[in-house]
Image 1 (cartoon, helix red, strand yellow):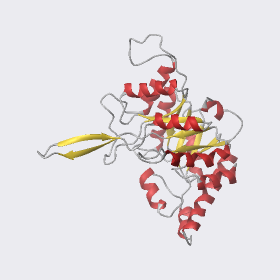
Image 2: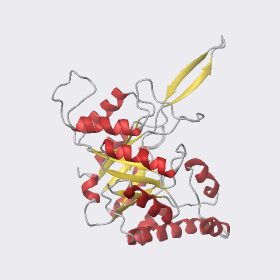
Image 3: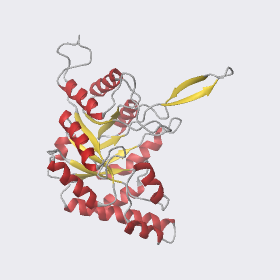
Image 4: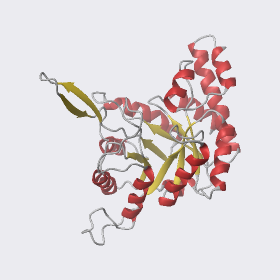
Length: 317
């Protein structure tokens, strides 16, 4: 497999994509139908998100509660294996601290290595639904930089078990996440960038950003990153809006701003198709401007839908 960092360091600008695995009980063909239209663009890689197990509490007849852990989606390893069997494309799985012990994460990484996957995106993950803050597992990582450091250790043949001497050296290329408008838990953007630098210093190879709708905020973010010594590639992440409802829902879910010009454009749309086109046209304009500013690539969040992404990439690349 090709390393993402090598692809990013080439001279060709390109589009990459991010997929959300289907819910359990869903037909695997649904995921395939999302991927197939995107293969028209010969993406150098496709990311697959990871979702932690969730918990529920059921009341017993005696008034006590029983905690049940359940997974809403197939495992990332199963999804990645299925895609690799069907499509000739580099797959980049996400691996998250949330819901996993250090040893579980190490085992998953070794499984990826065994499958010949040498690209991953290392993330902390979100808090469980209903919780205000992220709570790590008792033997887990509280921060993504700790996960990045463990992967870097594995790349040097160092494992959690001290009895493992001269272990197999993995060869992972590690991507990390960043927030051009700051993570909602950070006090300010400058402190958030310092946390980002910790992940970079731990061994990350490149950065993928959260979605944003104002390119000036991205350019300012990149400038601040370079000023503190972050030199690795920074890839902007984009998602087109498709309905006016997202004007309210996305800022709540992802803690980002929607430019007033975009809000007005959606409010002036006369029907759902017009709303859809507003989102497409805004994303096309964003993409062209980013490419003109020499970003190495643009990472598109598909959210399980390929139609508008297909339309945008055709217009841009």
